[in-house]
Length: 380
Image (cartoon, rainbow, N blue to C red; front, side, top):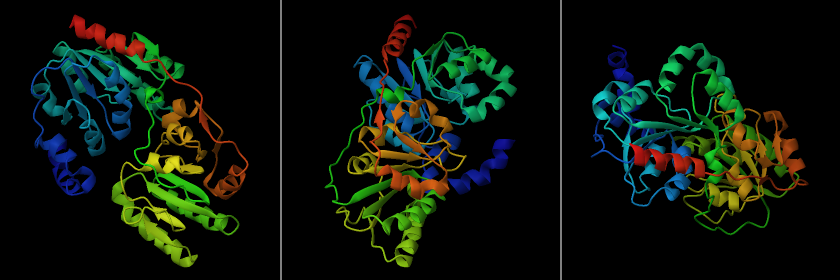
């Protein structure tokens, strides 16, 4: 009944670029048939970041393994398609009983807890592993309120690899068994730049993975900072559908403060005061030539932060908001980050001039994960 009532909204959203593929595939099975046959390993993930984090796992499992990957988002789907795997969108739950085949192992990343996914896969004899599992601080009360529900779900899970000791205790409270702390698998990934652009002579400030309202915070601080210091500002919005609205905002500031502005897709010389990166896959390339990284997603309390490892790897001086609750485990591995309120950004930019670059202090060992996957591949 709820699904039928939601049909007009789903139809409306399917016209938006962000959902153009995923909604028809997930809710109407458009071009989204079952995997062709049973696989040795099926990975289920949500988004682009998790698809990127999956690479070191794929690099370590036997090269001839038959792999399936399901995802929720279009960005996750696009990244997963780069791997040697059969890729699908995970359908809406009512389709799963007849959509899911038996696979030897199902590896579910982070917090993708879909009841029918676990129930049907378990019933078909698939071993289920939770990888990079976490329960964010913000969600603990909600999980505990429905402990009876998660306990039934987690009974079907063979092994849980969690990000931290805190996550271990939380999963234990929900009734999970066989829990192991390995850290965040994003620490195991290779961080690379795909292009090398000439670094400007003046200071380069990048605002990476920004969300709505964050660009305005950055621009307000930058125009004040620019009066005293010779610096460029590069903004890289998190979501491509916002490129145009962010550019219009930057045009407003450029006009009011006599600053030059360009789009990266049209001019890669970085010759203007401000640059909008309106292309996907360029953020690491920009971090590589930046001095300071203002990391988006943590200046409001509704996102939870973004990956600090990438700007730290390239030696940026990182400035972040204080709402990074979804990525606490990653932030604890990075040294020399300024955590600020939005109103403190101008002071943080000035302070960064005399600070050492941020850096990553630790890596993790994926061997326990790989050994468990291989074990169940042989047994099942």
